[in-house]
Amino acid sequence: MFDQLSDRLQSAFKSLTGRGRLSESNIEEAMREVRRALLEADVNFKVARKFVDDVKVRAVGEDVLNSLTPGQQVVKVVHNELVKLLGDTGEPFRIPTGTPAVIMIVGLQGSGKTTFCAKLARFLKQRGKHPLLAAADTYRPAAQDQLSTLALQLDVPVHTGRPDADPVEITTTAVEEAGARGADVVILDTAGRLHVDEELMQELERIKAATKPAEVLLVLDSMTGQDAVNVAQEFVDRLDFTGAVLTKMDGDTRGGAAVSLRAVTGRPIKFASVGEKLDALEPFHPDRVASRILGMGDIVTLVEKVQDAADVEQAAKLEEKLRKQTFTLEDFYEQLQALKKMGPMDQLMSMIPGMGKVSQSAVDENALDRVEAIINSMTPEERRKPVIIDGSRRKRISAGSGTTVQDVNRLLRQFESMKKMMKQFGKQGRRGLPGLNPFGG
Image (cartoon, rainbow, N blue to C red; front, side):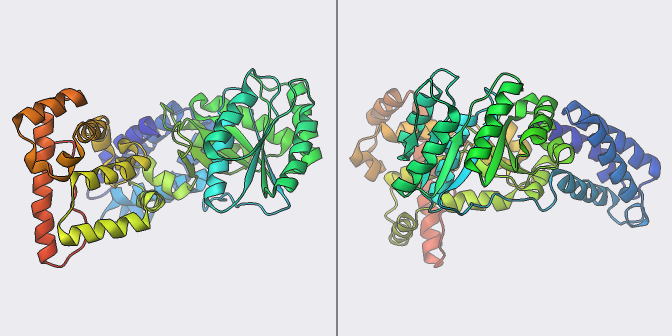
């Protein structure tokens, strides 16, 4: 997320952070690089110009020029201005109340509306709501089938209509069905086009008037950059949407849409989609995103991911095993599964301050899969008693997992080292699971 913009901005600050004192010319030179980085990230040129001007006004001040750490002070100024640009304190998505509450999802075709509808349903279900999905896109082939398939995965009810039915009729009927089913939120998956046109807008306006949604969320493909902001401007003029959703944030996005959107439309970004899986959805926090862009990490989001993936009962059992020193490869396998639920390793590493570069260069994304494959190739007895794994067993395990004998040996060595460390922790009366690094020797 924002890799290109992040690299360019951090490069611009290198000339500042090593200096004892800064002059106006130093800051002017760095701001030229910042402006160039923003424009290359496809940030709206007016937004980029105002941002740089605002930073210069604050940076070329007595508190920065005479600071003991002027370079760091400039970075702090940029961070604060970037937070303001992204939405300041933000307007987080608040689960609407109603009987039932309606959330209308709009956007162009291919932006990821249907998948986001399912992700939002999962998000609401995890928070104690009872959503119902309404398939109101009667134009795109298989759109209703796609939503029905996703709803089945989530065990969430879905309302579909005839292919020739009026989308307004589908949505109003869905709201009525929600009341009968006891659903308290209706998510409307509306139709899109390849571009904004009058027919689409009139249909969406009719749906909005008929269902009176509590939220109208515009889904935008973040990889389209400034085009996404132009689309948002047209939607805000016609539909007055309440918030935006940026999809494909895990891809090769330059970040221009996220940085420009609030300043151009006046509407907040409420969600960011960071992957294809249904759990790959994050509420948008301007301060956290600004920190990640500037390479400062995002510990708060990382902790939230850990909490979401944590199983309290399983954690208690694990703690007991650690105390009794009966931790096995089966237990480690369960921890791997919990780790994978938190998302790709490069995303997790990028949330740790100073680890952004490591995540791009040193982390082998396939390492966890290899470790998982090795453990899956073992018999239950071998997982419980790794000491019995001799040479012939190691050959069989490596062949069955598609890895090398060296990979198997490395895993077993690390596991034994971890058990020794746990004994030391147990003697000291300390709790916690020392890390097993599946990426190196």
